[in-house]
Length: 214
Image (cartoon, rainbow, N blue to C red):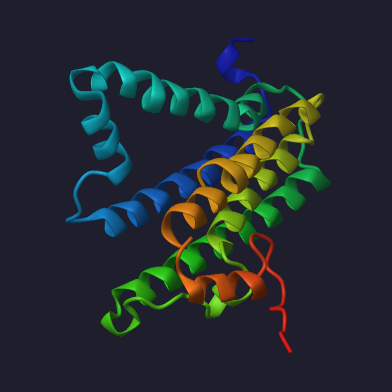
């Protein structure tokens, strides 16, 4: 059997479809959000700091690191494409699809709500704390993590699929501690009193009911 024929074809199609939908939605969202804007401020700062050495710095600091992250995060998809068994759909496949769908809906809705909020001139300087953002300070990141946990659960149907847990663990840790929650709140909102009040009442990641202050 040639390598391209390895794996259960239905599971391969499901995984390919799910990651394609994820990528297409993210592409259109980022394209709309960044249309007409200049270079990412972080890259502009690095360009200024490193001068003529920026190209080699960016090669390692931006492109190669991201490529490594993408490879690790996609391990579940890669393994699911070649695992030969089981040649049927299982409970894990259906459970994973449900988790993935929940994440996709949450992330899409959160991004849309925030985009509409930002586009309204009357909201300039205000904090987004309605809709899904009432229950989590970063519901879009929570939805993103669910997407990859859903992929992992699908791959649990395959022999030794448990080892691909490194993928959702890495993306969740990254969103919480590296490029997501921590970085966003440190760079954008550290000096905003209204946001500090929002922080004291609202869950950082997992959606939950707001805390009441007496």
